[in-house]
Amino acid sequence: MKSIVITSGKGGVGKTTVTACFGKALAALGKRVVLMDADFGLNNLDVVLGLENRVAYDIADVIDNRCRVRQALVESDVRNLFLLPSAHGYLGEKVTAQNLRLVLNSLAATFDYALVDCPAGIEAGFRRAVGACERAMVVTTPHMSALRDANKVVALLSSYKLCPTLIVNRVRGDLLAANKIPTPAEITQMLKAEVDGVIPETDGVYGYSAMPTKPFELLARRVCYGTGEPLDPAADYRGLFGAIRRKFKRG
Image (cartoon, rainbow, N blue to C red; front, side):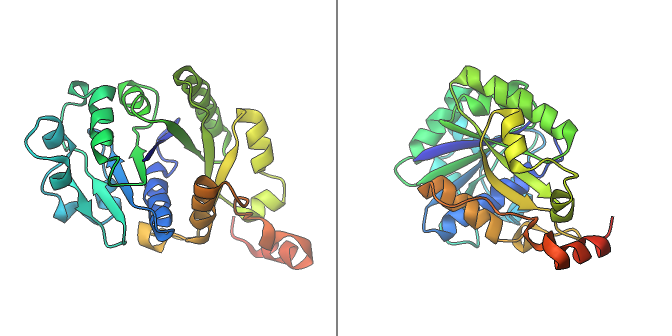
């Protein structure tokens, strides 16, 4: 089983929704996937997945030996996709990276991928989640404040001997085509980390189930097979007709 921590330099970049959609895309490729919510206190992966009413046990029960890890797993409506929920109000300082690693090891024979939703920032929760995983992906947006924080996280991950890749979320294709936000290539150069996924900004507010599937499918294929390129959100905004679309795109 490959364990991947999904982290970010700051909150509000869509990390938890990206984790859920990425897991769904891996499951669509036939991989068995478990999503572990390692954000103690501000955890909402169960809510994003629409599974909050199905949770009977959580990771705190597993760590405290009140149940077996399989009893705490919640099967989602997506085939091959499971959730290991976090605990509301559980004291995160009682949990160590070794605790999480032991839980992940107990799942290794059952799943192909474990995606660990990490707390934003670089405090104890970050260190705990990162220390339990063998790979890291950093979610950011193309805005300078998010990129600056992501850069700090990328640098810190090197001390864990991890070579993180990036998922750039909420990319507006019209702004990308007009050179008003950095391109994935420029972000790679700035952060010294490869961009594995580009997720376009969508008009309106959508839940996890309504997110576009194509960018996550491309991301999943790159991670699983090392093939293909990330989505290009600017493709529809280039050329003559693209210029017209940009003109009428809302600000």
